Length: 205
View 1 (cartoon, rainbow, N blue to C red):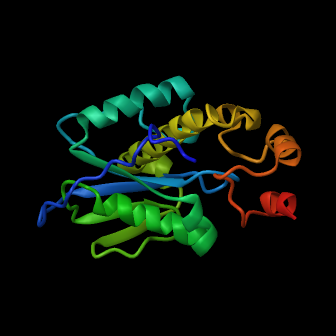
View 2 (tube, rainbow, N blue to C red):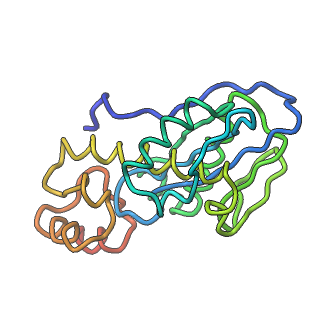
């Protein structure tokens, strides 16, 4: 059973009719074989710029951690949300990703006038939204969202590793590495493995 100590997604109620604000949205965790898919939405503060924002994948873990704290301190508001492994298996990873993004946007303390989403798809929202391919490298607010989502999910994996150390989640974060696949074959699936993902499904046969 999942420990109560695991991180909870951060959300806050809406404040309606805030003109001119733009939120960046991105996700982390579409590819792994286990755990939730995590999305973040961020509205940056032009009066408190953050240097070094970039696609989270090109940053070192240490740099991501430092920017994570700086974004949380300087952004006008942010929200981190997730779709669970059960939801991923029920509605598929794409729809679960859209669900996590929708929850992240709806969790913002301030309602943006527009939402910019990394990629080529957007979740169902009541706000004007635009998808930007490669947006995590082009739009600072999306870069910030990618960092929040990545660091939050990595921390989740590190905590879950404490209950299931035999899989090495703290190292590979759930991706299908040789180490992870070998552990799957040896130990079977744990409660956070995505049953509908092929490598996991093959083990469960």
